[in-house]
Length: 154
Image (cartoon, rainbow, N blue to C red; front, side, top):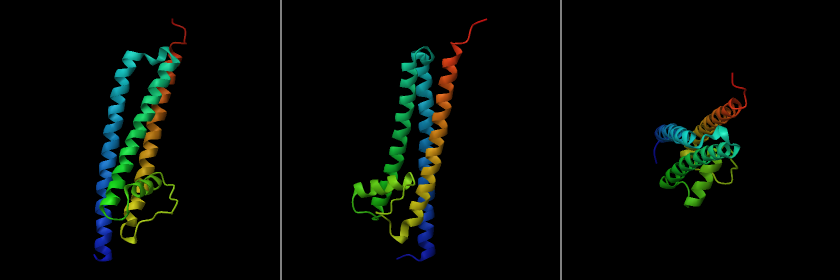
């Protein structure tokens, strides 16, 4: 068994790697969503129809949800690979409640890896907040487009 300092170092190395992976995944995922919605915006002209606006927003919401799902699954696979949890379902459940900071406490990691799970909670909080800001920005822009065609032309 590694010394406490060595175990803490392993926690920090694993956490740093996971934060880097999930942040990059999130960045490039939001970039892809932006490009996808930009192309769809040209074809659909959502400002002309409220249903098209709804479709754009739903596309973004489902895209964001897919990104978070992948990030949660990556943590679950790590916990399973570390031997901290017995089944993938248990690892997925633990990762989900940790990522979104519910923290029920009915499934916990051993003291060896609890720093990793705490950093997952901080990482998840930041990524969910980033997603919220992104969704708010997109929704605001769509509403601005909606109001542009209502204004009288000079």
